[in-house]
Length: 124
Figure 1 (cartoon, rainbow, N blue to C red):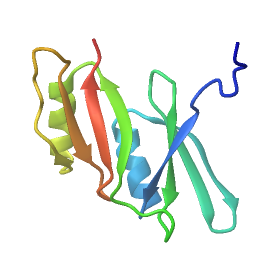
Figure 2 (figure 1 turned 90 degrees about the vertical axis):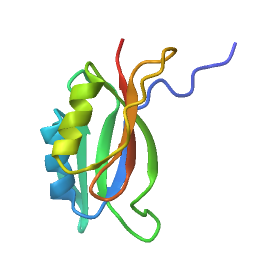
Figure 3 (figure 1 turned 180 degrees about the vertical axis):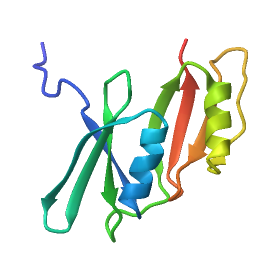
């Protein structure tokens, strides 16, 4: 039997150019700020959690080793993919088409203000 080394996924860091603008975006989407502090001079850490809890995201400043415009691989769940997509369109984000396949839940992708790609899937 293998011993458990890791027990959960706590946080995923997302590089952004404007932490306040990115924080406001995710708060507008229902995330709650759980930490916003300067860990060391010039290094601010903002952590936001989705309403149902679970893995949070942290918004960190972009840099040479941490570029923006990435595919985050982050999959967000929603109870209504059509409404979520409409909200993101209203916020003037780049939003992909709604994929409506018979064999899978509704889903789409969007990019934040820095071009970071996120994925959205309708929760069953």
